[in-house]
Image (cartoon, rainbow, N blue to C red; front, side, top):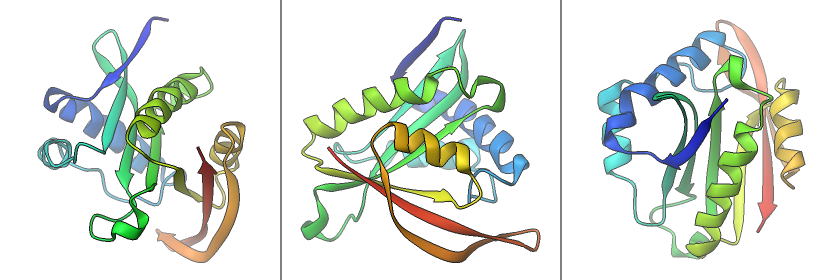
Length: 164
């Protein structure tokens, strides 16, 4: 399976939106409960600062996963060293190493852009994602109880961090 990892372009917006649609439909892996439209994704991608990134996993022209790196805060210079990560991979591609490949690329970008720490929020019930992030060196540093409510079902959000 030849999958390339590359920086997202505006032309990837529809593919990223399709990944969102699939993950949101599962209702268990992300706190995001509404897929972003291709137009919203184009606006997001075009609004990224030089210190932010989105990388995609491309399998024969189809986006099968992506990872975003955003500044923790766009207005607090006291946290310029902190980035927030998000990783999203289609169900049929999970467990194939795509997440780790995305992370290696994103971490290189983060280090080159003066990030010292990355944080991620993971659903409390998503033990697979927590294990994935732990395999990358993240550790749990906090928990927000009943932070997510989708279709009447509550879940915690686990805050994890990694010092680069």
